[in-house]
Image 1 (cartoon, rainbow, N blue to C red):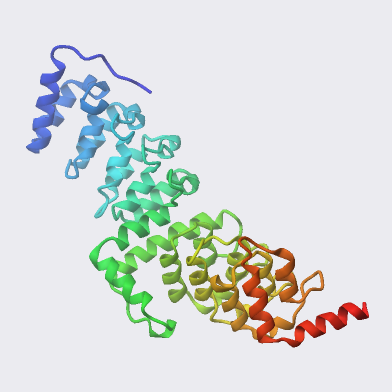
Image 2 (image 1 turned 135 degrees about the vertical axis):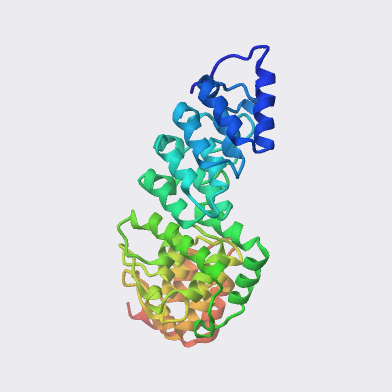
Length: 371
């Protein structure tokens, strides 16, 4: 990275004068100074290790032409992180794209794709900054296109996909929180009414980011699969389950797994949220559809999902599965005994299955004796 020239006795006076112009929005004076002293754009001794480009992009109402001039004079400054939170100028710009993406397009003309993958102190890329500050869909598309979708693979240090950042930002607003709460109170998809414009704008961005992340895996264009791969929060997944078309629940991925199968096999939601995810997917007969010749009940038991955290709901959605057998030839209760679990959650599964159909124990014994 270019570190810029060293500080001298006049630097502080120059920095203070520039900051005064910015604070008082005297843009003509600042632009004239830059034209007369282009070397100022190479100075990286502003407070916090900023360059002039940091200064003008940090302020939301800086004129577009001034940013264009500063960026074109020293394009390398786009890749210089500040000393506070390791933000690049493009991070700053991405926090002020609520009405227009023009400033982002100016920086992208001089920006390396590697700079766009730079993570700040919190692990966020410029795309995370854009998602966290309600940037326009056009801005998100520009960032994804400029990096050939590589930016979608970068998560924060907490493991958050950009879709999660978008969700957290929207649901933390009053109007977003109320809209989400109303959606989650709806029991049937048919009861979902007309959604407000602010939600539709959020939802368009959410679908774009999730599907753009998922398409790279050459799997079907399905939102439920995409959101699961992005490991989104459970409430966002439950909202999606209320909004997608019915066929989304029955769309297999490239491995032949329905969304329900994938949840049972990979268990993306720990603890109590696991039951919520499974319940959200059990509305269209998925419990009767096998994956790799195994019914979902067998899959739930094989992957040690506790009775109260999902196995119960899978069985209740397709009760006759209790009479099915695993690939090894075991009834569900016997498979539960074999796979075990900690701290023995399979005991409740065994008990509940045998209580539902006690004669399976006799059938199992007879089969064993006959063998």
